[in-house]
Image 1 (tube, rainbow, N blue to C red):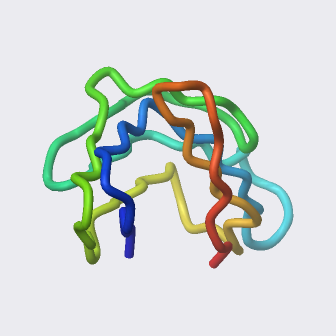
Image 2 (cartoon, helix red, strand yellow):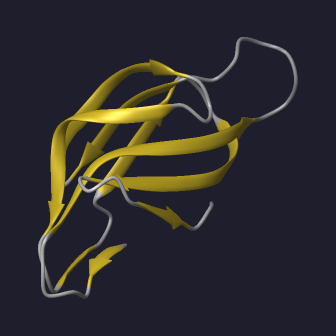
Length: 99
């Protein structure tokens, strides 16, 4: 869930996601796409901890809650996401929980 409890809109322009892979061996996991609010915001191939800049920013409207709005696709199964940081249009960053 993403929530903007403030009086002004917030624009997310990118993320930094750190993750671990299941098991040992095999090729390293890559992040492939990010979709938010049913719109693909980025596609490519990056490793854990890379900064991803969206091709289309995502605006959290003031006073709004978004449930199940983010879809992060990877090249194969993850063991865990150790951190998720949202990057805002003003350059500030907000950490999210890990899963």
